[in-house]
Each structure stands twice: as C-alpha cells, then as structure tokens.
Length: 312
Image (cartoon, rainbow, N blue to C red):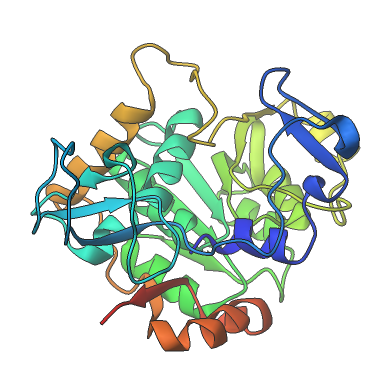
C-alpha cells in the first residue's frame, strides 16, 4: 500500500480533482480536455503483490506453474495477467522484502538525486517506508550524520535502529532549527523530504545549509500551508531537485541509469543484506481485515508504518 498517494486520491486532495495530466505535453490541463491520467475513487487498492503461479496459458513462455512471482498489482487473492506484468522473484528475497522494492526504489532515486556523498550530513523528513529506506541508503552512501524527522514515535524508533543518529519530533519543536543545532548551526548538506507535508518541506529548507540540496520526494497536494519561499529559500542559494519519481523517464543520468537499473540495484542491495525491512511492514493483516486497516491509515496514522496484507 502506498499510503501517501492512495490517501491523497481517496481524500480528493490531488490535482486530478480539477485537472488531468497530459503525458505528451508533461502538463496539467483542464479536466474537460479529454486527455490524460485521472486516478479517482472507486479504484483498486494496493501497490505490489507477490505470489505463486497456479495456471498458465498456452502461449506463456517465461513462467510455469509453481513459480514465485511479483508485480505492481492491487489487493486481491488471485490475478489473471499478461506475462509482461510480472517478474520472477529472487529466491533470496523474502515476501516482505519484495513488497518493499517500490519504496526502496524511490529512496534510491532520492539519495542519488541528492548526490549524498561520503562525509555528508543528511536530514530525512518523513519516516514512512520511503524515508526509512532512505535512512539506510544515506548510511550506505557514507553520510556521517543522519537526522530523522517525524511526529510518529514508532517510526522514529525504527529509524534509530536503521542508523539515524538524531531523531526529532516536529510537533514539539522548531524542526528546522533543531536540525541546525545538530550541525553546529550550519545545516545539513542534503535534506530529503518524504512526508508530503508543505510545512515539512519548509523546515527541510530551513535545516539545509547555505548552498545545500533539498530533494522533495513526495506528491504534494492542496494549498501550501506552512511553506514560505520568501524566507530561507530566497536567501540561502540552495538547490531543490525534482526527479525522485521512478516513472518519470528519462533520468538525468540517462542512458547509464534507467528504471531497470534502479530495480536491479534495489534487489541486489536486498540480496546482499545491505538494507532491511525488519519492522517496516506494520501492520500486517489478513485480507478480511483490510478495510479496517485502510481506515486506520487515514484515521490513526500513528499506529502504522506500511500496511501489508497476507493471503491465506
């Protein structure tokens, strides 16, 4: 389940309520233009599924009954799909790791787009699945100080286990200032903002050093409450990098890096046990409990990190 994306569509907070995105022009246009992608409810929920092949058609060449496979598929007990929609699952990856390939891929994009380097100080605002994977990847990239910012205690605790050095609750302090205090008032080299909060983006800017880099990962919605680009952003000559969205191709490093290489890298990191999902999938529920679990994400987010549904 992609909490931020799905909830925004469910709540009617996305630009698609009034506009549509034209993939050829790369622009949002009036909704009555008749073009573009328009995700609205009711819609299938879920992000990635892993399971076992039970039947194959006569023309299927890449899979056989009994194969363990995965793909970007919604929540349901059975799927009938083209063989192009699924991939063979690495035997070295657990089911839990496979369903976290997606947030890990976005986190990898964010760390790469931010050019996190050996010796850098990094702040990560928003410690959901993407932010928690970014904590680990920033550590792997050689960051010597990692600061995690999130209002949910469960997520901050897991970030600490994953390697974060300083944890900040933004509901009880000026988080941008606290990031500065943790860096001798200089600010971090790179901030990654993955919460989807405009206010968090504002504090990511505030906590980033003069000339530093901010990488907004989230899909922001609605009026930008709490974000003031006339303050630190205007004075501190920072760089804000768009592009952590995996689907937005070609990448800046094309042709050396493309979507296939991103996913291959994530899978290799899992296979080599350089990143982990221990504790990240919470809650894990049965299919019959899914409706209540979805409501919990909306109404009691402090009890969740990333929802997973187990069949059978």
